[in-house]
Image (cartoon, rainbow, N blue to C red; front, side, top):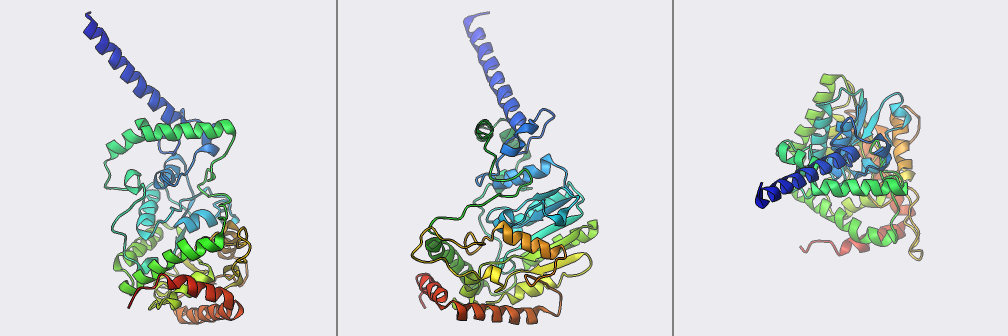
Length: 388
């Protein structure tokens, strides 16, 4: 054997050994739970992360690597608020499959991926205010196209990435690093984000990022000014599939802080109290579908702003205007589970206008009790108003 042949053989052995080593590392650590194998390390389960960069991939990995009796779907509001170990799911293995910054389009894909593999007893599907009246996005800047949720992606390329990819090796290394430090990941093994932190300078963040986002949402709804037929068809598909499989479906209109809700009439939203959304959700109530509405001026949603002269002060129950803490999530699931109380209303056809009037009164009451907060809202929104 000449030197060239020896070099070629050495190179092939080196490449093959590297690929085998990467494969064994990624399938043993299984950092996103998408490569379950007989030798995957169960001891690493608390340290497997649901990183924001690979959020869709990791939530799909929960479905791949487990057997589930129930699931929770929605945006980051659901990811943060709804504990899959709540008594509502007693005796069931429930996964929180909430996706950061996801609307109905991606949540439908996650739901279908889950339902193709499981026959759940219960599905909780959280709908954000305005989702049904907002067209599907033209671009997706998340890892959706790299995840198992995208039916149009190349499955061979995707599986090679999961088993041999550099990004997966990096995630495996990060998982092993957390295990060495005995530092569990931000999410539980059931996909629930534990103890989401309150931001520093919460009031300043609300005046900037969150009210800017709120303003863009209202402007988009104003331009569109109707239910989006693609979104209503998606909701129909979710309801029909649950009924066909005998799965109890719980639709939840998620809450936002009262200042978010007051921004809609302040910005001239043509449907400032989300009457269209409520009518569309209520249309599905009955025959195994429960519809719950938590979007109102209830005291849990109506905390006054933290003091302006205390930068470290924050709401007790709100991380920002969009995301309620798990304490509020527990209260929502308590009501769905049958606990009496004034938080949340089970919405049924024929009750929507009464509910809208109740919401309007609650928001007006907040405005009267907290004029300083309303003045803060108006000042903050002024910079985002469009020119005539």
